[in-house]
Length: 150
Image (cartoon, rainbow, N blue to C red; front, side):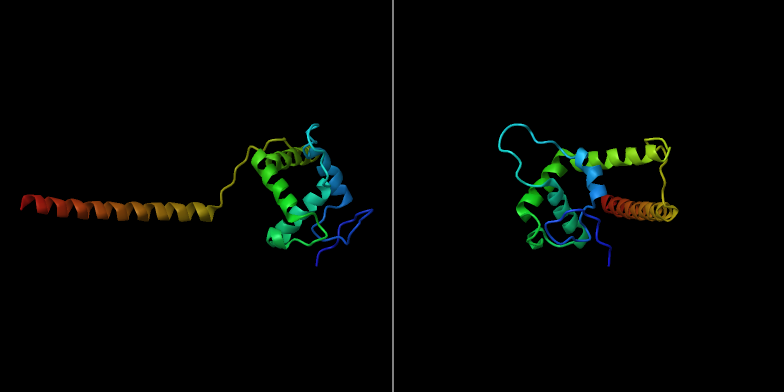
């Protein structure tokens, strides 16, 4: 079983998928700020993230989230909106850049790796597919030629 995150003040029992205080300090500035107009935000974004991470970690359906997390409709709405607006990708990229710079590495990676087994499999399949197509074409040509002569 996983360790529970270190959370200073909780209003409910912690789940292993919950954000620790240190993780929340990193993610909070990366989340979208309120629009500044319209209805004020009434949900706690940390709890929204805890709900999203709970579903992602356990693999349960959104409707089966525990009742002490925010309503699954709200959690799913934020998940979908952030997906559509590219917020998840932006958070990923910013965290990766920050981590790489802390490690003294170039911010953008310039190396690509391919699994040699995947490359060999693709190559073999490509040749066999090409041979099969060539055989079929020869067969079609031979049949079509013999029918035309009659």
